[in-house]
Image (cartoon, rainbow, N blue to C red; front, top):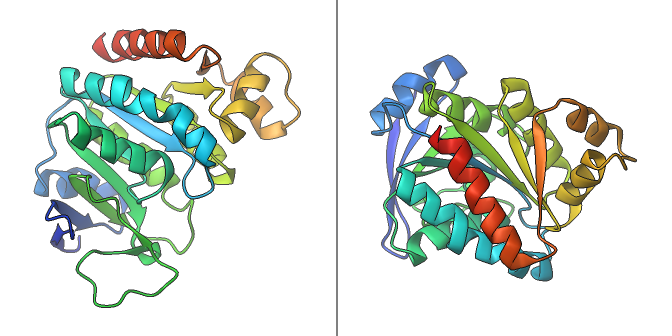
Length: 248
């Protein structure tokens, strides 16, 4: 087990971070940063820096009107990739926007991110999202190395409480994230109409798969989709689905 860090962002927000080397250390590591017990967990995966402006705007309301308020009302833990991009940025901003108190935990490969108190970080490092409350810094030299860790962190935090993955938009790594959830037996709710990987998976769930990975995920039986064609209806359906699945 490595050290515990207190991060302070330019915005004056602070977060607790812990470095871990082995997944077997997670229980102790999470308790050290104040994350214990058993609570419902919402995992959010999907588009990061390659998400288009149009897709970002389309899904923004889901974060402020559904994901953040439900996490708050259920006292859930929310787990994502923690960087200041795409769905992780939307999750952090939504939490602050509604004045929520739920713990928002970013799980990310330490070698790929710039910590806020670093002197002149390398240009190719990605900043952490400043509205997150906690970070788990994991080993790995590539994006995607965090996928199995995100899933394992969610399992440890839920500690037998219900958990659920929401998948919006996304690229190659999002397939990996989906497999990590499915392999753990965690239901994945795909937001159809949010673009890219999510739409490929939704097609597969409708029996229109061209992508082998999508086909395999659809056949797992633990993926379902919610359509965003009508945004008002999508918001209502997503809210109801998440509440039902996380409250049981």
